[in-house]
Length: 218
Image 1 (cartoon, rainbow, N blue to C red):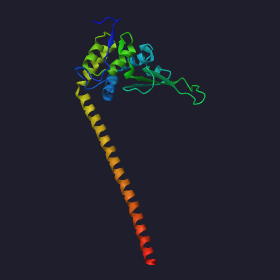
Image 2: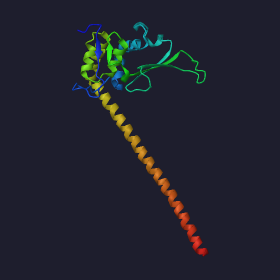
Image 3: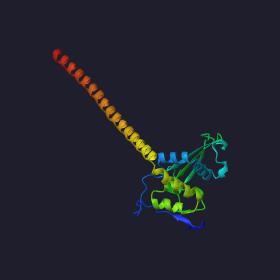
Image 4: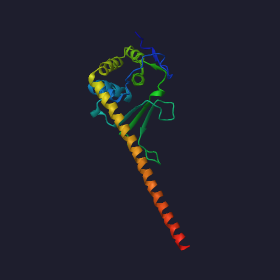
């Protein structure tokens, strides 16, 4: 059992050192929706950790502001901090329009290599960053209740036929969309090529006609 004063250490290398790579991570859209729809209490715990408010206050109807939370698997801002919070400001005077709308961005690559298990927010972010079974197991073994619950729910959901079918349909939709966009691009390029070929043909015909008239004048 890990003591509460201990920390979690992660390897930031691209390789996983032979560890079992997760087929689905917490960044998976279908998994995210199924997990938090079927287990709303977990979503409340995540929101409470992000906003640093008591769990009992993490109710959508009770929140006094519109809050946008984005968890990113890449670096978006040129800063060292993994958490950036934004308000809407007047462009020239930089005065806030309102404090009723706020945007939070969390950049996973910037999470510290060593995460203190007393820091619930960093534990949640580590969960989203986890890419191997070993990392999930280490989070579950922290004895932090929401981590153990989230990992257990993850395993329960990812083996269900419902999740597998939704994931299959989602991937098919993405593939079909990509194919349609590619086809549209090729078709657009072909139409553009035909358009310019027509323009060139018209110009060639005009030049030929002018040459013919010059020859007649001579």
